[in-house]
Length: 373
Ligand code: BGC
Image 1 (tube, rainbow, N blue to C red):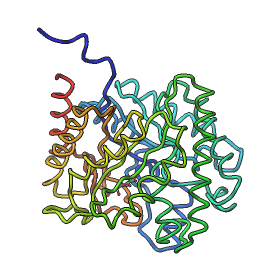
Image 2 (image 1 turned 30 degrees about the vertical axis):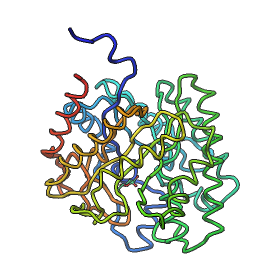
Image 3 (image 1 turned 90 degrees about the vertical axis):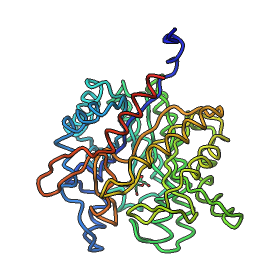
Image 4 (image 1 turned 45 degrees about the vertical axis):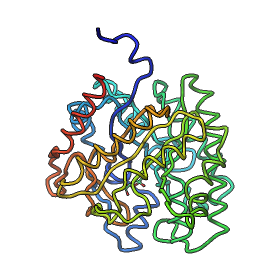
């Protein structure tokens, strides 16, 4: 007998993720300026997703996804402080509608590292105006998109502040600026908390949280790193999260296989990461997990092994509600430009043609069998 009725009390979301600056094309924000000033490869037209989102979502649907994570480009909707661009807001309404029409649940990120130029010019995340300004943007978006239930305010604040204020290779390009690093973390945490409250006031159904990049530090000597990188920020926003998001790519171990980024492929680290975040006693979502693999000769196995771990942790009692592969499309990989290929879908940047990689069909088979069981 089929157990049909009992099995789907809580939906499990399967999909892929993108972020505005990495796929949309033609953005004008702190990152596009930084690309020019530091002679990096310019993001340019990127994957032209701004114009092709319907076709791209059609592919996602075809690949068996039932959810999709994308981000709103703040610099588009609020190009000058307090001035809302209605045309751009409509664009994101259209994006949400296009997802819904295809049966894909939208998961919206509000900040995936890029900010408007006016926000940068006043000091970016170290300005004490930053939290209120971000919260106002979040509130405006919650108002504009009332049927969006899942809101991710911040993407990986830990990675951003490490690169932006310690390593100096990302905007705002500060090196070992510990005071500013600390200040930016506090401002980001306060921005999240304010946004959390306002989004939930606007939308009683909303579920709001952040997503954090987790590296598994396997050695005892990595304890301090584990605290600062993995837990520090999540602790700053404790009590203001309906879920905890995890983005997992690698551990610090030497392994047999590496991605094109040179990152060790270590599913065991994923096991540890999921357990480490389960301690916050909130539903977990994996909002990013993926591999740069231009030849597509490791991706299927990567997805298999990591989803295997995910299912194991669920059997062990972990409350995991969704898995999003990074990324749906090949895209602009920040300071690395267009070299790394993370997509389920390959992009020919000369023609913008899309080609579905073999591993994407494998992911589809995994999704189908998971939804059946
Ligand atoms: C980020 C993505 C990035 C991916 C691969 C994550 O840390 O959220 O924007 O493309 O890693 O490097």
